Length: 139
Image 1 (cartoon, rainbow, N blue to C red):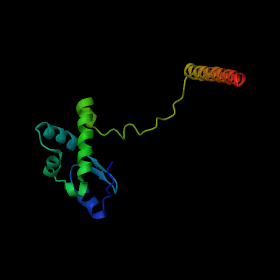
Image 2: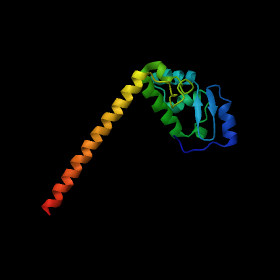
Image 3: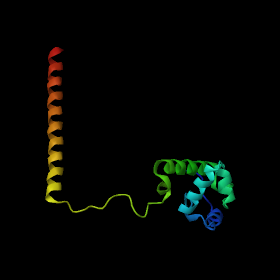
Image 4: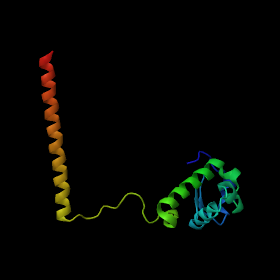
């Protein structure tokens, strides 16, 4: 993420662009339409800066680093997932998953896994203790 902070005036200018979903002091969210347009134009061998400028963005306000990193991120997403990789999914998957009610079988499996982990930790601690005792005798 760019370290450049947008001023109130810059925020207003950026927000007036039809390809901007939202903008704050620290970040900008581009529309999915612009991301698709960017990829199409980039495949025609246009430079990222040129694509941004042709679509009403002032690269001096955005900063060259922000343009470069957005271009890199979108190209990678497109290469990995195609057009669907350019879609903003933040509303659909809001980060941390909600706690769902587990079935008895799922609860049992979790407890069993936790129990196995604790057993393995105990075995490891026993081995370390034995090794320490062995080292003490050699001195």
